[in-house]
Length: 328
Image (cartoon, rainbow, N blue to C red; front, side):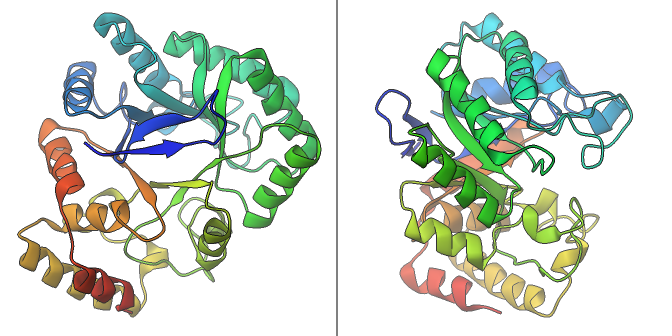
C-alpha cells in the first residue's frame, strides 16, 4: 500500500492509504458478512481510509440512513479497531423524514444540526472523535459563517479532527475557507467530488443535482486545487458504478457526448498494453496523477476489492498518461 498525508495541522493531519474504501452500501445492499470480509481484507492489505455518511443508504429501504455507520461501528468493536483506521463521514444530506429525498428535504448545515448529527455519527461509529467530517451538500438557507463556526467548534472540543466539503460550488468552498481563515478557525481541507477518466458535460442536469456541476470535478475545481496544494481531492465514483466494464451499466446521461468514446478507446489501448483491467487503469491514472487524487472506490465483493487493490502498484508510463489525458 502507498500513503499520502491529508491535512496540515500536526494535531489532526493523517497518513491515509492512496486507495480509500467506500462503505456506502454496507449494511443495506451489501450484507454484514460480506462487508466484514471486505473491510478485513482492506485493512490486511494496508488500507486505512474508509468513507461513509450519516445518510447511507437511505434510498435502499426508505429510511433516513445510518446503516453504514452502524455496521462500521460493529466491525470496529468486533475487530478491536482503533485510531489506526481513519473513518470519514458526512452530514447535511440526511433526509428529515423516512422515504423523502436528500436534495429537497435534507437536515442541512445549521450549527444545531452539525452538533447533533456529528454526535449521532460518533455514537453509531463508536468513536470519541470523527477523524474527518464533511459538509455533504450545500445549504444556502444557513449563513456560511454559522456553518463554518459550527464545524470549528467541534474541532476545538476535540470531537472532530479534519474538515471536508463535498458537492459545493467552488466559490462557496473558497468563501467558507476565507471566513474560517479570517476568524482564525479551521476550514475545509479535504474536498470530495465525483471524478473519473471520463468527463461529464456541465451544461446538462446531472443524475444527482439539477446543477450537475456541483458534484463534479470540473476545470474550475482543478484550477483551484492547483492553486491550493495543501488541499486534498478525494474522488468518489471513480469507476462510475461499473460503467467501464459492465454492459448493463451505461455511463450516466451527462457523460453521453462525443468525447466519451474517444477516451474509452484510449483507455482500452492502455489497459491492454499494461495487462491491467479498465478499472485498474482508471484508478492507477488517478493515484499517480500530477495533481494528486485519492480515489474512493466501493467494493461489494472480495474479488472487486482485490482488483482495486492491485491498481495501487500499477505503474503507467508518462506516454500512456499523456495519451489518456489528451483523448477527447
